[in-house]
Length: 465
Length: 106
Image (cartoon, each protein chain N blue to C red):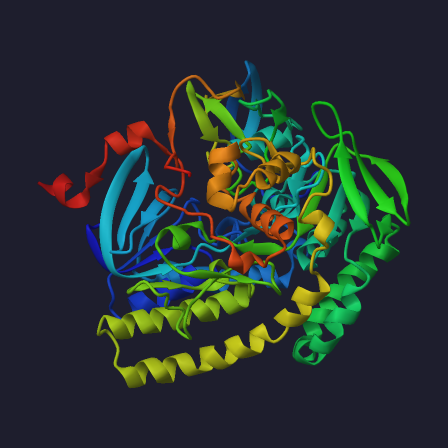
């Protein structure tokens, strides 16, 4: 690590790897940092040392990450892995903590490629041990080959069907799939079908997963109207509401999923403007065609700015890298334009399916805004929906005030698993759109830092002397 | 736990609440414990309820454990090392204060 770089990239998923490969190939001094020890992000997690012998389990889409990782490995970007990135200031001062010591360095250009996280799924019992995200089921499979027999998969969205299909391919018995996709979504998705037909093969792939799961004899129940998970000290059962009647399935492991959302905390704390996207029900970075934000020198690429998937992320990484190269005088305008044109076309094509997917798998209100007052919304501080509604009735106007009222959003996850629910809850109670509310104010450190680490803070320049 | 055919991995031994267990080199503490179907990793500071890993990617902080005497370690972000001593974390953990957003909230 040096004390200054031309371009610093946060995240080694598809966007970050693609950006770093392009940027260093054009002679830029590049730093790329990630929390994980290995590259790949979550989508290609474990790609550089995959130990699962049967490649059909994770499938071709996963192994596509190999060529990206290989190209990145051949680049001469400085790769700092296993590090916590706790700030990117508007002046592009980057705070990194590694092996118990904090460092500060600067860069002319910063590309934030922090990827996606699971959308919160605040239902009764979602905090019980044994309840995990479908994404975590996939992380365990990709990184350690770990699976859970007789688990229940509940929710909606392609990732839910994909991981269940991967379990099926691996021969892991599944207790049930409880599909919460509202039936009315089909009609609302219909107008977006023409765009999606450009990706007919993706749609057919999804249909293949669902068909395989259904014909395997796995219990696959559609049209679920509500869910709750019960158990004393850990998960004992999942209960579901179907046609006005509650049913119960005993299970020790439940995997929840209702889509992924951008991991916005770092970019928001850097001062990048975000807006509420009502179609995608999450925050989106307000960026231009290059991914550049309102903060000079800071751009956002990949799912961290708005969900587009792994392939789109790769193109966005390339586009952001060329713009950073152009801004730092490493490439001329014409070279930039010639090089990004194919990526821009491919990105436009890639995004055509998104409006259809967003409408088709839009999670129903009751899974985003808890109906039951006792449901925990803020997992860290154990703040319930009832407590939040009570605070609103006492005059709490927005998510920042709510911190003072309830400590909601003040725990170590810093609102990552409650702020979307909180925003929607307050907006609904006040009968306004989320865009009319103030946003949760985020400040560095965006990841909890031990006081001892900060006490040892060094700038790299002072280390050298 | 259903076994999937994997390339063999070197093993390490870790301790969880005094009990020795085998883990694969290169996996996280959370993965190693989940492999042995340990689902509850800690109790919460506010109500003392049991919690375990939820997101497995460093976002939720529900898998906090004590590792070699240091509390508030994310089990899903910490990789196993031979001889590592892991303990369930009860409540807030004794020392090692997190520095987080405690700004004015009004």
